Length: 417
Picture: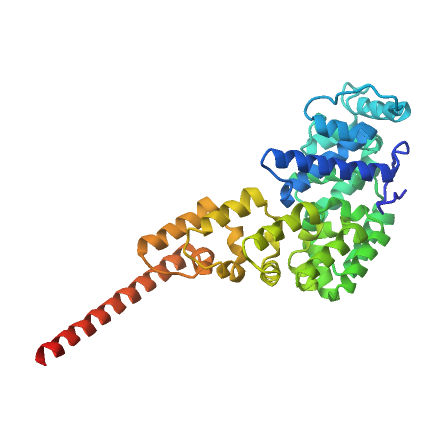
């Protein structure tokens, strides 16, 4: 079966319309973003997003129409207010299926053991609670046979070079993988993606980065690839993007990729170059992530052209938290005696650790009493950094000696006259 998102699967929650679920997830993300901002944190980094969104999806499936109340009141249960508007009741059929599936996971068979596929998953490194959590999200998982579905897929992944230790993570992220036919779906989809440029030697890393990739419909993949061609990317570069950042397929072309491309274009950025260098930032929210950072730099006196240059040189800049990363580093930068234009030349400054790299390196520069370009202060290895400092100090001493010699000659000439 295939849902409206272009995802192939063998189970669907018929009681919950996909449009409603999508709307609830967006609402939940908005509420969570507001909550974190009030706490001095932001839902801005890719790492935080990748952890929280799957959890929100789980909440949306579990709580259905009450997802917004659940998120607003987290960690406490939502407060149910009296209202004249009828509240939709949980679907008893869906709840029954879910409970039955979860119960099946922990059932003890006639031999006094758990079911074979559960024992196999535990042997792979999963625990019973983790398997129950997967089943709660995706009840069909409890009914997958060991020999017919789970084991063949796991062995196939191992043959591709996926480490055994990575298998639990992959299954947890996309249990539907275990329900896909190798001969009819999985292998043909891989061949299709290889023809689009995915490096067949890197399948282990690609699948670990984005387990859902092999469950997406071909039409969904094609729409993303067509968009990348439209942006001016070559077939070779598209292949590299799909290999390095397969998650780009999960982004909606019309709701996410195209608006983000238009936003970066408005900053004067070459979108095709940015897509090739840093495709992951096209999954960020324009309103919550991109605009606040742009407005921050504009407010500090940088021009639109400056901001465009910075993002062109260092696309990952927009994946950093404004309050927890950019602002603290900006405030320290103001103490470093560099002109603001240095950040346009070297926006990678924001990618270095403030406490472990920036502050210690700058303290060393001050200690030596020399001037060093910002990119040299941070980008050089420790040994090369020290060599650069020694070279600067020798030159400074040499210049002082020459100056003293000139002054001495001048005094002698004056005494003769």
